[in-house]
Image 1: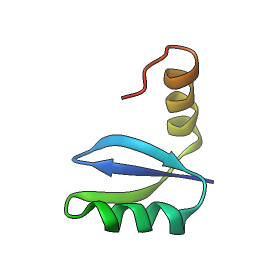
Image 2: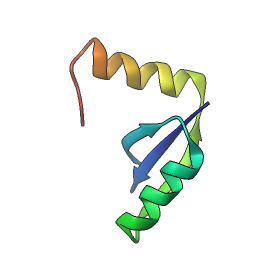
Image 3: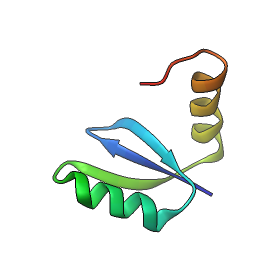
Image 4: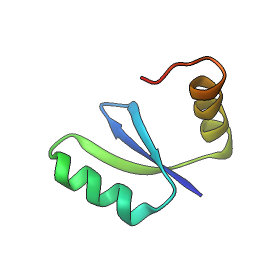
Length: 56
């Protein structure tokens, strides 16, 4: 499973461990949240990063 760190519906980072993602969101403060990524969302994000070179 993968979890995404989001702010205002913008995907910031992907984590494999939910507790790590939640700890990071808490340390960053207000407006950051974590949610489970579906397979399609995860696949799309990895394609953007590794194939298309989009890191933001």
